[in-house]
Length: 374
Ligand SMILES: *Cc1c(COP(=O)(O)O)cnc(C)c1O
Image (tube, rainbow, N blue to C red):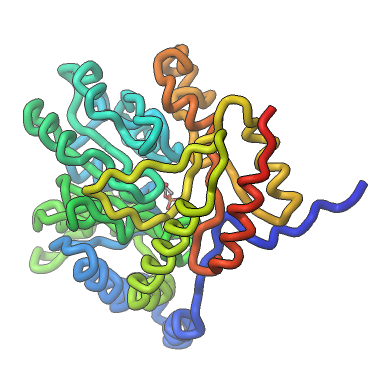
């Protein structure tokens, strides 16, 4: 058997500059490794970039959602509306806090929560909506906020993929009570593991700073432990790594837009549907996600592109179809969440990131255009 061909164009790759690495090394040499001035510097750069009043850095994007739910007062037995198509952490974070995720189907062209289906999922136990800005395209947040106001629900935006994404010019994560971001290598900037939460509320910000640090009161309060908090702090060397990347985030976003434009112009295949970008949204192109017609096999497409050195994968999961949630819900997912099911089974995320060039994109578009139909 021949060995598998090398991946020349991975689906995602971190882009760490010498300056980013030097910033982290300076912290390592200082000996002060845990949450400190670099965390605050990173937070202030996030506040400036997103326009959020407060940014609170945490250990990862999953705990960011968990802490946001806790800070918002979500308790066991509450229900939280979650899109049926996302990364599993969106639903897990709800369950880990003891609450129940209630799945709602998505739109098959934007891959985002369909606001028209939310009303039917609301019960007297519903306390919050947790919409995802899937693949870095803002969801229909105006309609979601209107429903939330009508039903007195809190909106927490899972903006894990959406650093640099905007809706009507306003940054993702600044519409709801809280927004959560991830700093995993699959996202826009990275320090391995990391996350950040945004809010305009001083009260929620203070609660989050306490919850991430063992429940320790924050100044000007007297020292003491006022909550059963997590240890969800980001280290200072990780913060230095992402604080440095924040300085060239605009450059990265420009490059990503250029690549997305190129794909829109050059991917032409009767069995491949390109993502829909509503006119009021400015995605960060964290992921470029195609939808394959039923006569193209997703696994064959991934394998075929792999032999050409191109890393692709399915984009996200139909959450209620995963074993744990299937057992809890006893759903027939395919009928109940037809779009989430379809985009899970027929979606294809293709390489689009800082280190992909236009020449690479031309090769990748070509390879996709050659995909055989059944
Ligand atoms: C990546 C991701 C998360 C989890 O972030 P981690 O930093 O990996 O914990 C949550 N929600 C969505 C939509 C994501 O894409």
